[in-house]
Image 1 (cartoon, rainbow, N blue to C red):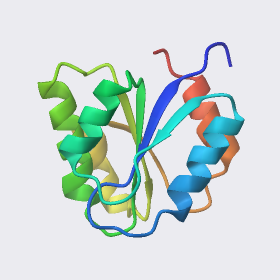
Image 2: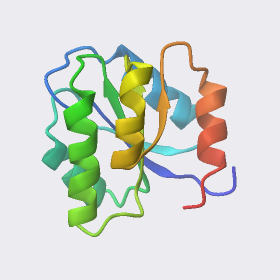
Image 3: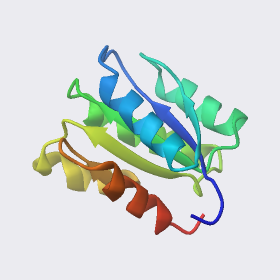
Length: 130
């Protein structure tokens, strides 16, 4: 890793389970990145505002509630509207294969499901040009 990335890890919507998001945040910190964890139940607007305020290069969204089809695209839309198209968005959680193309089309760069290793996530980030 050349330069640490500034990464916001967020739990959009009403999902109250954040163990996975905390594990990801810890793995990214351990890999040398600067991580801002937003806590539970954030709106897309709050997530984009936090990313803006923190000068983030990456947003990682975690969803276990099934609302990813609305919340992830909304974050991507708000980023575009704010002129922050250069922020890379990735998602994780329980996201069925049939839902993934819609998320990619909306601007999500990668989706990591159950069983993804921290090494796979770090490899994805190392491959980005931000």
